[in-house]
Length: 246
Image (cartoon, rainbow, N blue to C red):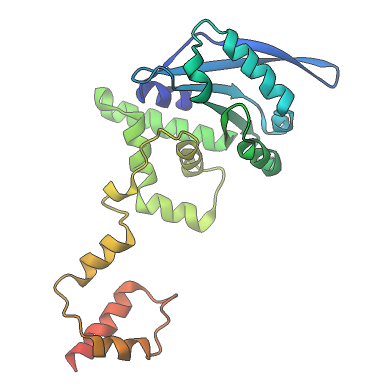
């Protein structure tokens, strides 16, 4: 299961025939295989996906990208409108004990030339956990299974998010899913539709619903010993209501 490819297919990007090109690095001839995906609805929009291990990211320089752009324009499916509407996704797998090559990743993603570029970094363990989870969900849901929906549900699960936030575990499925979702701009990550995660504005409106607002009490609240940075919204509202009842 290649989760990235499955997601692009579900998002209505059809896989075209792969193509390759050669570059020379330190007297070594390296063949780069490119897997293209073209939008069904907007054929000028294209994703090019290549594999480049964490230790190979420093190879993705101007020469590398120039050769890729040249090979892309020679591909049978290429149309001129694609040149300004193509996104390059570099799938970069690393060993569980290997440190992220963040400097090369930033240089690639910040480079303004040739393509919009995203580096999808993930570990062996995070990929394995993500694959096992989706295979389990696929067996459970059958024909109703959707990669997009399953990722959204997982990412918007408050318990999973809390565990990831507390541990920052790069080997987890959550780490894999959040990195993947942020590296595909067309991925429909809309947190406001979640039942578990609400915007601050919606949350406060819900909490303040049917609560009488008294500006004098608010002044007393501001001058109290409340730590507005650390105390929870529920505790602050509880104090407000107790002052209101006096």
